[in-house]
Every structure is written in C-alpha cells, then in structure tokens.
Amino acid sequence: MPDSVENDNNTIKKMKQLIDLGERLPNTFASTEELNELKKLTTLPDKFNNAFRPMGWIFVEFCCGVDTASKALDMHSDGANEAEIDTLLSNSFIGYDPAANQITNALRLNDDWDDISSALRVFVRAYKAHNEEDYLVSVPLFLMVIDKLSLSKTGTKSIFTDVDDFGELFEEKSSFSGHPTALKQVLKVINSSMKGPNEELITIPYRHGILHGTRLNYDNKVVSTKALLLLAAVVEWINDTKPPSKDLAKKQSNNTSFLKKNLVRLNPQSAEEALICLKTALIQKKSNEIVALLNLDPNLTNFVQKMEPWKEWLQNYDILIEENSDWTVRGEDSDKTQFAICDLKYSIKSKTTSVKIQLAEKIQASRGKEIIDFLGKPFWQIDLGFQGTISSEIRDIESK
Image 1 (cartoon, rainbow, N blue to C red):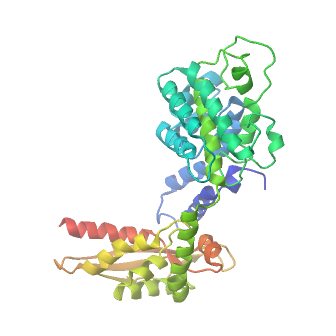
Image 2 (image 1 turned 30 degrees about the vertical axis):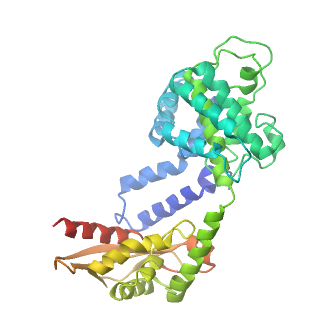
Image 3 (image 1 turned 60 degrees about the horizontal axis):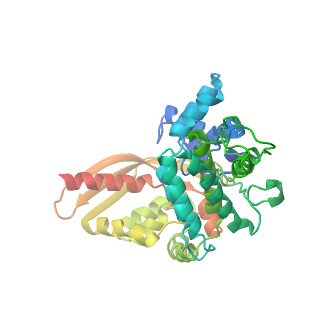
C-alpha cells in the first residue's frame, strides 16, 4: 500500500469506518449525498498535496479550510493558472485564529521545551505584520521562528538544511502535515538553491534566497501566507509526535481502572448483551456503568466528568428502553470492527412534573478497534447517538 495520508491517518481511517457503516446501513445516520461528501474528504489531503506541494502549499489539519481546498482542486482541474490558485489560497485557505493559537501554544515555555520565549515574541511581531500587510517584515520573521522551533527538535541543525539528513525527523505517518508526502517534500521546494541575485517577484518563501539577500522581492501576501502555513505544519508535526503528557498518562491510567471496574466486569460480547447491560444500568440508576457502555474515546475521555449529566438525568427522570427488533450485524467476528443496529423504544418520564415522552429510534452498537487496543480484548459498546437522543428529549421535556 503506497504512502498516503488517506492510508495512514487515524482520523481518516475512522471516517472510512463511518462511511462503511453508512453504506452497509443506508439512511441510518447519513444520506447518500452526505456519505459521498465524506468520501471526498478522505482523499482531499493527498489530492491537495499532490497538486499544490510544488507551489509551496500543503494541507494542515488544524487550520486549513476544506471548502477552499476543494475549490482550488476544481480550479486546477479546470485549468486555472498558479497565480489564480495562489490568490485563492492566500485569501481564504488558512484559519488564522486556530493557526495562531496552536503556534503560540507550541512556543510557550513549559517543561518539555527549551527556553524559546524569544521565538514567541518574534512570532507575535511577525503575525501582527502579516495582518497589517507588512510582508517585508512578516516573511523573514516567520522563517526565523521555523528555524528556532525546529532547532529544539534537531539540536543543532536547521530544518532548512538537507532534509534527507534528518532520517525520520519532521515526518510522522499518522499526521496530516507531518506525513512523509507532505512537510518534508514541501521543505525540499522551499530549500531550493538560490544562486546569484535575482529581482524577479517570487511566490515561494525560499529561505536561503530571502535570508541571504539574493531573493528580496518576496514582500507579498502569497509568500507570507505560505511561510505561516509552513510554521503551522511544523507545529502540527510536533503536536502529533509529542510523547503523552504526565496528565494524559494519569488520565489513561484512571480510564483503564474505570473500564476494568465497569466494562470488563459487565463483559458485553454482543450488541444484545451491551443493550441488556445498558437497560439494567438505567433501571438501577448506575451512571458509571452507562458511561462505560458508551463508545467514548478511552484515551482522552474523562469518564468521571461524563457521569455528571447522567447522575442528574437519573435523579430527575425514569429512563426505560426496550428492544423493538432484531439486531442487524455487519462484519465478522474476525474483523477488527463490527457494527450493529436495531429499533428501540424509549420512555422518559419526569419525576417532578410527570411529563412523559415515548418514542421509537434506531440504536447502534459497535465493537471497535480503539477499545481492543486500550484494554487488550474486544467489547461491544453503545454508540453515542443514544446519549444524544436522551439529552435532546430531556431538553424537550424541560421546555414544556
């Protein structure tokens, strides 16, 4: 399987699982049109990078606009020239607030970094200059911050030296911009040798030519935006390769303990068993078991916090559920992931007002790879749409 963001990125892998579920169970949670749009998203980063990497553009997950990227690809297919595409992307491709926030966070002092507060000061000045259209100032300052940030990872070498010397540095297969087909490849474009002075207008932030004074006709929005995008790409790679923080390690340890006490003890080995466990937990008002049975991210979720709304709901409402059809299961026991769906009857009654709502909805369950990776064995869980239904109906009751 060739290297590609589509094949290697975990977010896209999860998106493909949703698409697969939607195609197996049509019109359950997404229309055919919505599924087709999701399919386009799975290939968008690779198509964008392949088309525009030679121009100095790559897709950065946390700050790049999907609609603008799609429009640029359409323009490319229709024969638009580089200047037209540069204009579009420099005007509307980057989300400036998320880019600035992520870069600022990466440059703040903390235990995992050397003292790079000076780089933060330079970035603030560069960002201000960019927003004020003072590109003569913003471009070299962005390039300096990239150098400083990369030195914190390489030790002594600039990111703008021969990138092949860095081995696996500045690449991470599971990352959007850090993917081997993205950041390192666009660095090769930006690192192109600039021999002799030249006064022609440039549209790529050639680091050597700009900082060595041989390519000084760089002060335009296109070059500055590409320099900012490159800085964002380096930050995204750093974020995607950082070891888990002490807080995250503690959270994962707490989550392991929580799930062992609840999910492992309940041991739902089918969708039917998961629903029976959920039904019992609702009757017995056990918020801990309900939360453990929901398909929440075991790495990042604060399970104790997730129990709070359930404690309130269970205190104020009687919530009953009843299976109303057989389960339709997709996938084999040997597959890493299985999905199931059935019809469910809900009854939600307020203890204070006696207002009661009854409805019929589909409920989904899954046996996912994430929980297998986290606990070392498979368990069936109820998808989060169940909690969404409960929350929505309770809001309706409270509004009456």
